[in-house]
Each structure stands twice: as structure tokens, then as C-alpha cells.
Amino acid sequence: MSSKTTTDWGRFWRDIAGEFLLANPIEIGG
Picture 1 (tube, one colour):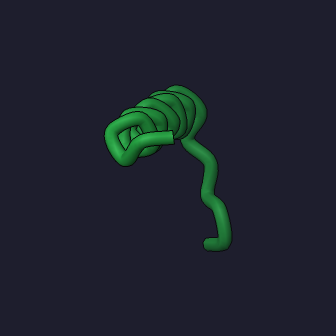
Picture 2 (cartoon, rainbow, N blue to C red):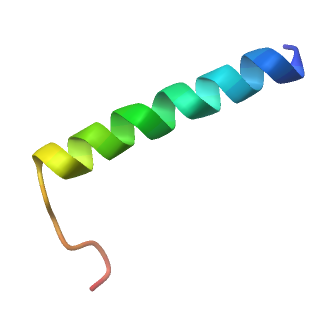
């Protein structure tokens, strides 16, 4: 897996996590 691919996947998952957290605001670990 190339660095570019890894970076794209990282951005992809971060975007998904961000949207999920924004759509479902939940306090994690206080």
C-alpha cells in the first residue's frame, strides 16, 4: 500500500468519524 493510499484512507475514516460524531454528539471519556 502506497503512502498516498494510506493517507487517503486516513482522511476518509477521519471524515466518516467526524460526520458521525457531529450527527451523534456523545461525550467519550468525559
